[in-house]
Amino acid sequence: MSTKGNTKVGTGRRKTSVARVFIQPGTGKIQVNGKPLEEYFVHKEHVYMVMQPLVATANEDKVDISVNVKGGGLTGQAGAIRHGIARALVLLDETNRSALRANGFLTRDSRMVERKKYGQRKARRRFQFSKR
Image (cartoon, rainbow, N blue to C red; front, side):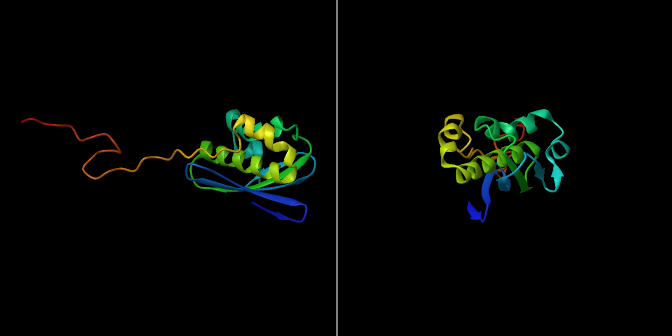
């Protein structure tokens, strides 16, 4: 997390997705990888997830957001963006911290996919046992 002039930068992570969020005072425009939010995330659940920190702090129409996100799927990317927006909002105004902390937006969800083990079909699923 850093500051570049009037722009605040927050880094969000979720599963294997990483999002760099650039936030500055503005009119409420959100761009994800150069596309508008609704064009990048076609499902309403993902748009809702991204907007949660802004709604919790009443900043929907007060900031412009530009996001670079890579890795993972759409749900992981939406979670990473939400985490990055929350961290950038704290840099923008420290009074946002209590509202974001109460909703759990500042906590990184550390759950990752368990790796596949050798001698097994999946991470925990064994090959079928044959007695004969």
